[in-house]
Length: 310
Image (cartoon, rainbow, N blue to C red; front, side, top):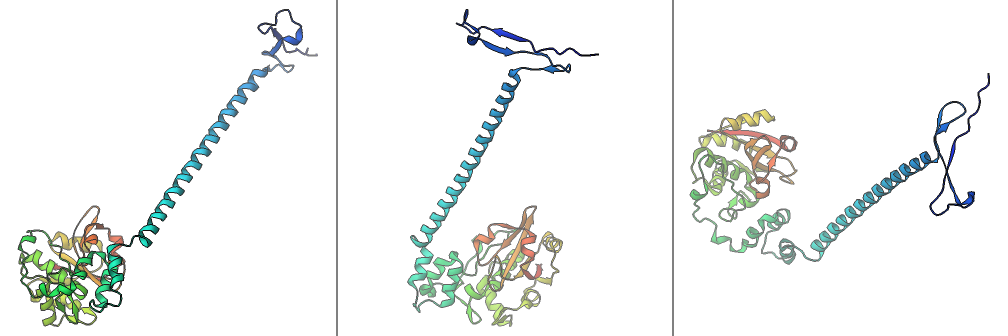
């Protein structure tokens, strides 16, 4: 049995203004019909729809490429501007610290270690600059009563001019006295006695043999603390151990390896914590004492630690 082929129906439409013209002036648009196999067939309108979707997709692709290239160009310009700013700042407009250090090259009025301190820590600029006038401060009466609040650990800096020029062992408190300064902060917090300032604590450490050319002896935090009426104990390195000591009302002193706080060796004091991290009193830098530190950052730098309590 044969199947009769059906031709697609062609409907002719006259374009406006072509009435009466021959077939060359007419548009012929194929419409729906049936193909020989019985399936629905479509005319040229489908191909136009597909072509329109393709053009839209291509325009979107091109637009996304342009946006991506514009973002790359913006990032490049920002990085370039940053690099230019750093270059100009470093080489064309040196900081006050850099200018001062350059002026003191070969000047024996300033100890080399003091200039090295400034080179590592710009916070010490005024202290170092005032070194020639140190006798105005050395041995003078120190009153911390207005700087001490009950229940708060005071931030004392070893390079404070009131005691920083005074001697500690073979050097100055500003250079060697991080240990006595930390113990002074702990003592004032735990006892409320503001008389035990870093100068007096450095004298105590020196007189009782807790100073050595390598720095402050670790026995200051146990035997020395006990001699001052405090309780000092070595702690295992662990976040829970530090928090437990702080929860009991004590503080934790840490001996630090080179890292965020020192290039050689240093003591810092941990005074509290919250869900964001630990609060630290660094006797050498205000900036380190103004931010919080997570345990993961601290633990790799802690050489040893002690809990100090009453």
